[in-house]
Length: 322
Ligand SMILES: NC(=O)c1ccc[n+]([C@@H]2O[C@H](COP(=O)([O-])OP(=O)(O)OC[C@H]3O[C@@H](n4cnc5c(N)ncnc54)[C@H](OP(=O)(O)O)[C@@H]3O)[C@@H](O)[C@H]2O)c1
Image: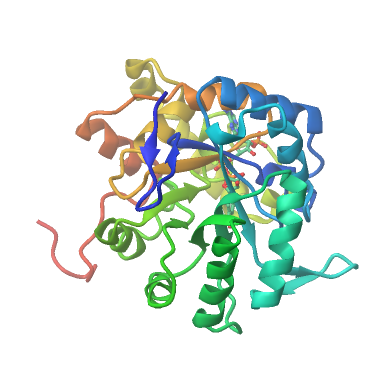
């Protein structure tokens, strides 16, 4: 079983985590619950022990489905991450609320839906500008003392927000978005985490499906991607052609394009885990095919220069390049 330790947490996890955002109908449309549960069980059978969810995914639905799937799996072998952030209104609207009372209340509900006693990694899903850092730290410390949360973690926080929160609470992991199309955080958040030994688990490694190699550029989308400029018109066609052009490199390694991209993403020394969004058992099987695979340095840069913005640039991009 391939395992990595996430920063200073004691958590030993598979470098691929199972992502459950796909169970959010407002983004992905209705997904089959039985496919999702079968995929979660296949994931465990194939060596994945790390599952990422959030209260926001389907307003609790993803947590409920994951809770059902893990009932029959050995709890002490699993690492479960979930997230808190929203106040949910009955009409479906939401607003940020990381006040201590709200965190305590939502944590209780997440535990119940997941059917577990402790959340291994409890994320602040986004930054809440109205709650002081110290109040958040206090609420999380209390949950740790009560045994309801093992580790506290941050998602979608800037490096400055991470730095500031660290003055108040010893969070162990961050969850930013990162893909080879948009290697965000390489200039600030990722080096900061590497130097402080903060675990990094990135989301959307396939750029929400675009890097899987299955699209030709002719497809149209009915889910949230219909409003994403990377999934429309000439930009979508261009990106798909670039992704398809990776096939000869993938073939040399005996990998699919999806696996090539995932293997390259996981080579970044700041990144320990990629969370892969999964709908079916075959999708997670493909993801686990990447365990133990590394590309040569030359191929790594060939892949990222083909689909992304290229190698890192000097901070002052007007400077001469030798
Ligand atoms: N913290 C946050 O704010 C945040 C935000 C976003 C996501 N996340 C987490 O990160 C996870 C991954 O992000 P993401 O959903 O954007 O992931 P992604 O891995 O970039 O893309 C997932 C999509 O790729 C397609 N796909 C997956 N496996 C495939 C395979 N083997 N072959 C072909 N297509 C495949 C599926 O969509 P189609 O089949 O429809 O193409 C799937 O929905 C989420 O599930 C969630 O747990 C966190």
